[in-house]
Length: 401
Image (cartoon, rainbow, N blue to C red; front, side, top):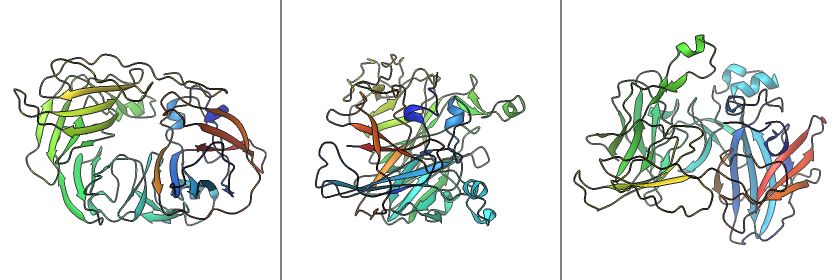
């Protein structure tokens, strides 16, 4: 997949840390919106991406962004690199060995009073609403050294359900924390080899893990590849159905595929020859992976509720049929050189109550405003620029209003 220039336009990295006071808003922010939106993503420490492909973007240093809201106003913005060992080495601040060896640049979640920045490659990192790095997460001893960047939080029980897929044994672990952050269940799940597992799904009673055709091949590093992950024709793609709090694991073989993200999953009482079924909504980009959906014999996709987002929706049973290719990802209404900006650049969590971000700084200059097709009508995104003191390029924030 062709990537845009990572150092120009909307993809340009932030080159410094900033604390901005109240921002002007175009449109109306609901007065009920009180809190801070925290997002994270990869951002090179020297303010410039070294290459032009996805492996030049994705592994870069984790940066947090916070936008505060209160009483219908945007009361402030700040950004911070996560204080990891990588950051300390670059900043030459000493005590490098005491910093966490992690790069949590994929997702941010809030659970049981803790805010966690996450990525699969290292320990979860706790932060606060001022974006300070607090240290390594210790609540779940089985996953303190690392877990998926996409654990699930049950909206009714407030449990956190998670897993860790590792290239070292044990290759797969699964666990649950209760609403207070106490570990209630943890187990090792037997698999024949380590697999690339990025996401999971839950229902009210079960969890689904995906053991698919993409796995690790460390000999690739000797052949000059930067990431030792590849497709294995010899692997059997299958889905694990696990009772949330423990019990027999049921495995379902499916057609060869790789599924990066799961949008939703729910239980169903619909009968089938193989038993009850469920419904899964899968996020699929045909340009990036071979993907088959878990589906019923009719293969009738549901209509996506958000225009332009490549969704494949199927009903799950023990049978499988080919998934039709979803529509390509599109961006609409763009007035600047930002048409190729991926909507998955940063993940976010919204916290309440708001924090104070009041330190004065130069005003922002809004360079473009556009509404991507995947955003609901009425939402806009403004890309705003302010000059870095070093003159090395624009600093960038992204306000969605």
